[in-house]
Length: 443
Image 1 (spheres, rainbow, N blue to C red):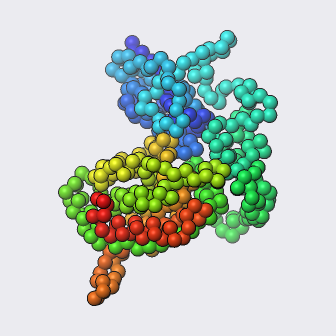
Image 2 (image 1 turned 180 degrees about the horizontal axis):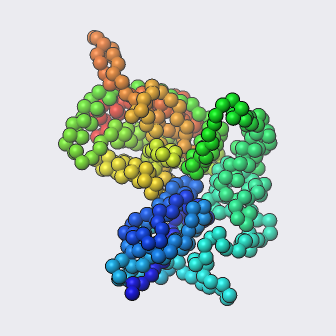
Image 3 (image 1 turned 180 degrees about the vertical axis):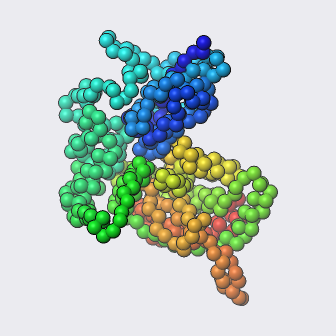
């Protein structure tokens, strides 16, 4: 008789109580190794948990809406072909902050308390009520390190925030709701420092309207990614003094070379974005103030010596920004290959927290859709973002006559606390010059 093994939630980057948004298996299903079992949605990404081994599902331990952490029991699976499934490691290594999901789920150490079954065998919803005072006695706020860092980033006194999660735990949504309420009421949502000096914005409360009075309506809840990204975008727009610099790049020769390169490498999809990434890195080296971040106090500028570029990817559930690392060390073909892989990973909901952290600068390209210009929102803690619109043929004066040239509109948004207008104009012109003569990318 085949052994029945446990499939558990692997390392998910140190996140706790992550909601289950999809269960892809049922008892009797045959699953292959790496096949998706359930889909989780953390504060940063939607993640699909793969099967650690092949076999037949005997029992499913989770349902949609359950909240899980590393080591939670997903299902019992009978080993494939009557053989025993490959044993899992005895105990996992400590979870690393911002780590991607592991390919295989290690079995967690299990310590049964007297009179209780091991916690992994009990569905999360069946556990007894959790008392935060057991972990955080006294008046200490019950919140994870990531949530505390998020509060510090917004300048929020976390002691003033009431937690809505199990046991009174404070989550990111509580911080965002606190800030929104403080801004709407004109209160000071922060405890001190540079951010506090701005005080409340004295905004009117959000209008409450019964839209059904005017005609048929349909309610559609926002995805978790839309809720999280919406809160981040609102914070960035409210707290960063945005300015946008516009510039046009002549990419006539670049586009001809790109098409030729694509014909020679038909197995790859070589998009203009790989050239834009290389041009941006060249500009970051020339103007290092763009490759920087303000610290949480707003009083120090941290200059980075690495070049990781975030790429905005449109997915059915919302916008995500995976990061391509060490762009300066990779060629065009390498970048094309990696860009294709990470874009597919984003659309398949397989991005982990580490895939979307550590960016220095972001690019948001709408070139495949249209538009002539827009104002992208800076992705904090970065200090600038490049928006790319659709290229079009235009008559350009070459000193003797007007000649048709393929012009690419660029929109550079930047944090005016760190970058002034003259520096932004130089940066935008530099990027356009790099794209206009791709030989410069070799320098």
